Figure 1 (cartoon, rainbow, N blue to C red):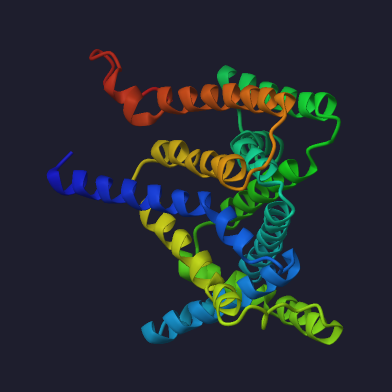
Figure 2: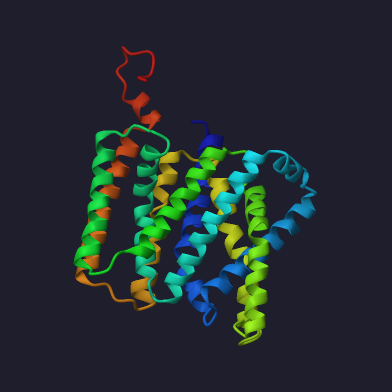
Amino acid sequence: MSPADQNEVRRGTTYGFLAYAIWGVFPLYFHALKPSGAWEILAHRIVWTLVLCLAVLGIRRDFTWARQLVARPRLAAGVTVAALLIAGNWVIYVFAVISSRTTEAALGYFLNPIVTVALGVLVLRERLRPLQWAAVAIGAAAGVYLSVAGGQFPLIALSLAFTFAGYGLVKKKVGTSLEAMHSLAAETAVLFPVAVGVLLWLSITGGTTFSEDAPLHPLLLLLSGVVTAVPLLLFAAAARRIPLTTVGLLQFITPILQLICGVVLLGEHMSTERWLGFAIVWVALLMLSVDMVANHPSRRRRFASPVIEEPAP
């Protein structure tokens, strides 16, 4: 690897770390948005993210992609489905944080890689290696254990895992036809009418909190656009520069920080049964990580026998 390539990898790793770290401390931001409810926060997040995207695209005079999107029904349908899935993920996550269930949200993002692998088998008919099968089985066992031992079905955790994994699946099926800013603008544009409807309904029924504790609370709601867009753009910059294996390992930063925020900073209680359930999930994630590193193409080439001149299929 040339010095220039090494520098790009270092930059990409830094961008990725920052993206996942920001996502990891999201509980502190959304907790600070109380007394706003999950739906009001979701609506503001959609509206101000779209405003930010349109401002950036306007400065860049970058709107020609929108005509191409409208002219491709399959891509437009994929963007719509992706928007609905990510909106569901957002509102469930915010609800978890403001209802003092941040640790369950963290569990959802620990489970996400396992659910993603499972969806690859069920939907994309991908073939798993033995270690991947074992990780999926252990992850499923963790879900059963948490339901039985904890006395409560982990609905929030599984909903977050499946909505985010589904979002990734749709993006994979649609393809990488849109860059990060275009994709975010398109998805929030799809959701914009719903967001406006929610804000109007809250205004009519007296449920809005936008004017409370001015100017800090309104400012925090306005900043939701920046808070949403910045880590996404950092992640997009990272994904172009670093291997998928590195991205996969960096993603564990987010739920670890979420767990710390929930237990240490927000004072949420973690029962012994919940800790054991997390431990089972971590075993599955360790197996996935080992499999990911061991089977990365560059590693296989590096440790291949010198007699073999072509990489194994």
